[in-house]
Length: 407
Image (tube, helix red, strand yellow):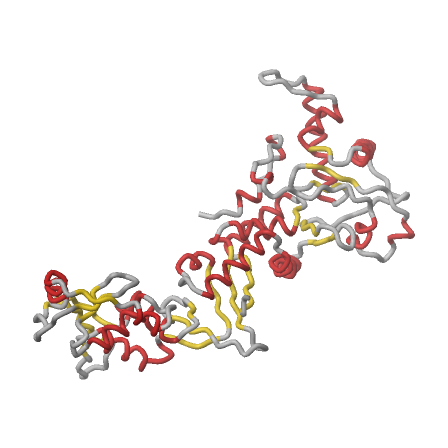
């Protein structure tokens, strides 16, 4: 059972591109679909991981060089030494003398197969613990020790002796003028030095923020499984992510409305407007909005044929009268959508709410009125939305699922 909370928020640059596309198109998008688009690729979101304070969950230990979180302080130190040693040390490979002594066997790791040391070697315990911390940190030390194997073959003893001739020297960086830098011949000494540095190497925290692209490097373990669990859950039903988006979109002056108390939430730059019995439109505008109302879910690409009777064949030009009628249709439809009398959904379908009584909408918000209008909107199939919606050349607008990806 996860003992952390994991929340997902949009990355700034993809979110800016996304909102610009929504603002420019004046189309209406499902809030859940926007959330799923952002969660689709790691570069589009950031992750916030919080420990459960009510359950007294231990804090995370974050590597300061890259912000990577760990549940154990030793694991965090080991990560810094493994991945970022060059930020604290000048690391050099050096040749050493072969170990001296009489060695009858070599113990090796039963998990990785690596040669450790003879049990009578003076650094055996240090090598054993160092290998456990760097290669098997999630395994209890006792279980790790129980899987150690012994090898008495002369070839293995010779291979270990040759292996021990290759060492690493750690020379401390960034020392004060006039001071001699500390030099460590053993990895464990370098590790203890990092522990002494404290908060400049790791810090304890209750909250961690990661870019989505960093998740691939998150160490395998309980914390990684928790993040994967929440991410998969949100990709399937992004309720929390959509709620996180809701406030941010409203602060950017987007309009969010819900069809029915438990219906789908939609996002649009345009504020809904409703016709009353007192509304007066130009003849062409009135005819078009009446047609859209009588033909709900009409695809915008089918409108020229359905409304004007025009079906342009490839390679055949429209006559001037037909071309002017088509142009006027685009102008009228654009005005109705931009003014909020007609809704153009992300899948290219149109909807016009029926006339309402003026007295019934006085002093009320459009979103409240919308909840009472007939539900004629189909829920968008996110999988089907990956295809680009073709529109007429003059009125074409970019598909949000494509435009959200930035270079």
